[in-house]
Amino acid sequence: MTIVGVLLVDRIGRKWLLSIGSFGIMVSLVAVGCLFYQSEVHRVDCRSAVARLVRQSGKGPIKFTPQLAASWIHRSSLPGKAGIVPYPATRPVSLVVIYSVGKFSDQTTAMRSDSRMPGTLNISRADCLPDNAVRAFFVNPFASFEQAKKAPLVIDHAWLTPVPTAAHGWLTLAALLVFAGFFAAGPGVCVWLALSELMPTRIRSNGMSIALVLNQGVSTVIAATFLPLVGDWGYSIVFFGFAACTVVYFVAAAFFLPETRNKTLEEIELIFQGKL
Image 1: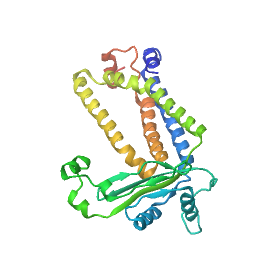
Image 2: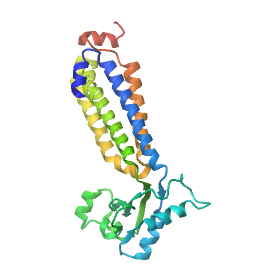
Image 3: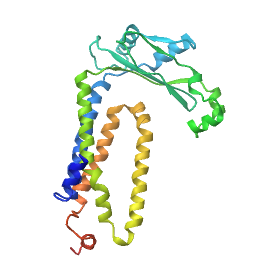
Image 4: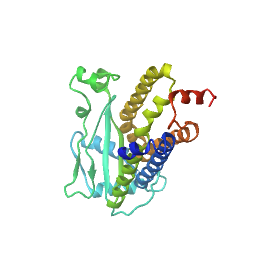
């Protein structure tokens, strides 16, 4: 798809390629969000149940069995509870528990209720706390290692989520590949070319340096916050948020970006000065 973008960038222009690419990104992200929502709408929050079992078992392992999962689902659906959208009781569910001590956290491996061997919830304070203060600094430089030693163990997230069907998984993969394809053919090819052409000659070097720093900075923030955001809000909300950001991108490309194809740098400057 990058090759497709390279072949089209001088034929249909930067504006059209950025517009088409950002629109395809927006639609594919909405599709991915909808696909994740179909599973996450059935999620069961079982933090209190997990915390109760951890207190009862001490440091011992907890077997994640279909019977245990069914009991948590049943309790969450009782009158007066924040009920869930019903789904077949025979449908397998997955569980991942995220827990913390102070500002240091850890998580269990993903477990499924239909596994031949029951999964084991091994939750203990020792798994969260680093070995020493030096390691603690590199794990979380904003956390106090000494305070964490005295802090209680807290179950941050424990969601029972129905396991999607194979067809659902293939659709999600297809939507992600469509997203990657539209990005590669549109913004992945055009954005740097358009930026370098739009900036006046006298500030082009400084402008591109600032643009590069901003681009890498935003990429770093997204990479650093993606998993915490997913843990707090779920995949669907995160992908819908990305799609909303892409709407701004599409509007800017489709309505405010001038076409720079077959124009000299001097002509592009005249466009912004209103003289062309």
